[in-house]
Image 1 (spheres, one colour):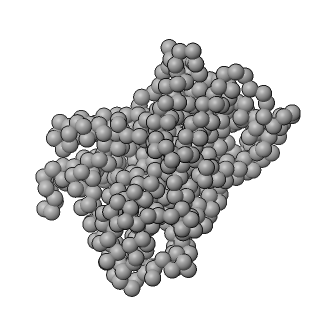
Image 2 (cartoon, rainbow, N blue to C red; image 1 turned 30 degrees about the vertical axis):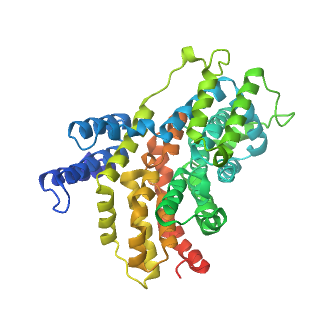
Image 3 (cartoon, helix red, strand yellow; image 1 turned 60 degrees about the vertical axis):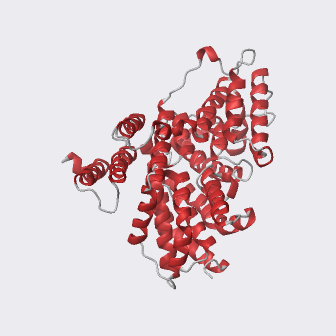
Length: 465
């Protein structure tokens, strides 16, 4: 009876039944290995989605089954360990330790307190809009969170919001989601955008321009989505204790930026150099992950000791989780299962030339559902090869079909779909359940309201001609 009352476990039971049925009754249009890969996806993804067992344990189960069954090679299963996403998370954790350990986070929190303190509503608005604007300056959601999350956590502590409180959760959601999801509307600001841009150029010779991309996506997926996010956070985490807390939190007097100690100054220089290299990665060509890793190594070098290497410890469960997610995406794409899934989605959401709104909504739904087994970055890699076919079926220009993928991967429902959100959970200690309380309504309202509204904007821009 308790199982039925809890939708999370009911969903898990249904998906496990689907997994068993695929093994018992293989699909005729899939090879044996593809059927087994599909069954494994139907086992692993629901376990991650529901959190029925620890996420890292699910990743280990994937590694074990995938390798022992021969579904994929060890090199492919463990390919996530060589991915830039994993090493950027590692580097971000080290840099977060340095920001907290040197006390720099507290100092910068004083600055934010002077600017944003006054009311809880003002604080949430400032963090979400600030996170969105940072998307114009820093090319990586991971990089933005590495810089901002330790500072914002220190601010929450200064304002008296304790771990587990609604106020602290709201503050964490504002910076974590605000730095990531609305910035999908800015071309170089997120990894999925760059995957899509690279695929469009490599496969079709289409080069996405910064300004055209911004005009198409920013008004709805950027600005309106940021405002929607603010409203949802204030609804989900109203922080009823905030009036008393913020009334007691007097804004610090004196200079806007207090003087820094030597370790804090050194940590600031490391962050500024890393920021400069992140901003100019198009010029020097060094991936932001390796910039972050170099900063992390430097911080732990003898004589620097911004993070003491002899006392260094890190929770590896998040790294195993990330590696598992990336390994599943690699298996789905290399086995041909990704293309098959896209074809099934097309049958579930049929398109016909002349039905512009229906075709637009079908392409958006396909892009949204494609992120569930492959994550944000994997969805454009899976769907881009089929864009030409979708263009012929719908009668849309190829560029329009490619751009509908942004509508899909900007509406994630589960934290496992996004590396930056996983890192934010890891650094802040916020549970998946608290993140879902914001992601679920944000996704549903986006799909039901913002995506149809975006159709009107695209139609005005002539995207369907």
